[in-house]
Image 1 (cartoon, rainbow, N blue to C red):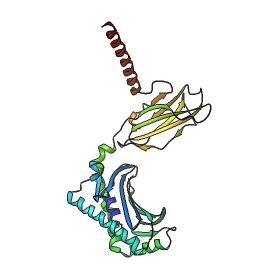
Image 2: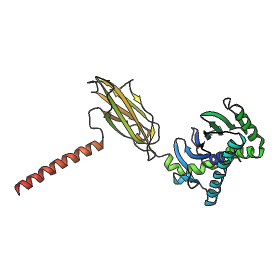
Image 3: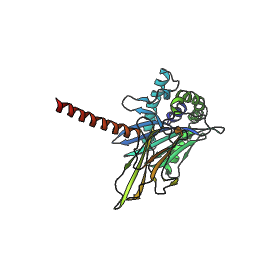
Image 4: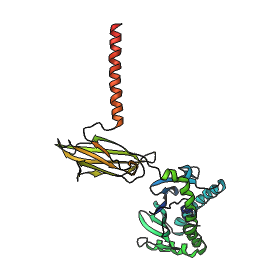
Length: 319
């Protein structure tokens, strides 16, 4: 029964029918401390989180309506009971059979990946205290070289259960591909949406005397691939530094690109943004120019307030 949850959830929540590989990742973190366990779980469609685990109620949280797939209420209840049972077996396996002691964190990652024209791949990997421990692929559990004797013992115990091994292989290799199309159909509108980026410029903390840090913010775009570069005319600036692409609360992405320039050399620079949602019409923001429609709106509001204040003062004075 150990680790049965991982391939089962991988089978329930994968996705993909394009030319590029489409993957679903299930991550489970379990920490043993002070004779008690804390379990956390999340499901990811590519880089989009679609599921999480509610520790208090022992239930699966579907972050999007379509991430539930076509499961009935009974199937959902059965799955949640299986998750709870899996966590109990997980605890017993590491403490009673492998004799782990004291505090230790474990990470279990199940990857379900479909390649167009190349079939379907499933893999489960387990890490203990930050080091690879064991993995499952092609109907076999294998120890990591860094796992030592405990990893070898764990694989011996798991590989002896042929019924369980066959069932897990079936879930990874047959059940998962059969359910992919249902999930893709349900989430197609969300996964294939195009959201235009918003961009604006600002000054960052001074990098040093006589220097200025220019920051180009790009936010609210989907899908994730984006190209951002500081330019002078058509020449890209080699000093452009791109940060990590971060996930916004609404499921869109955010990025900022910085450029360290000598004071007085910012004139003539522009930030260029390329994204699939723009249809080939790049966003180009020139340093020193109005940065966005929002800036224009704020400027117009300020002007209107000034005019209204002036008119009000004139009427008051005349009265």
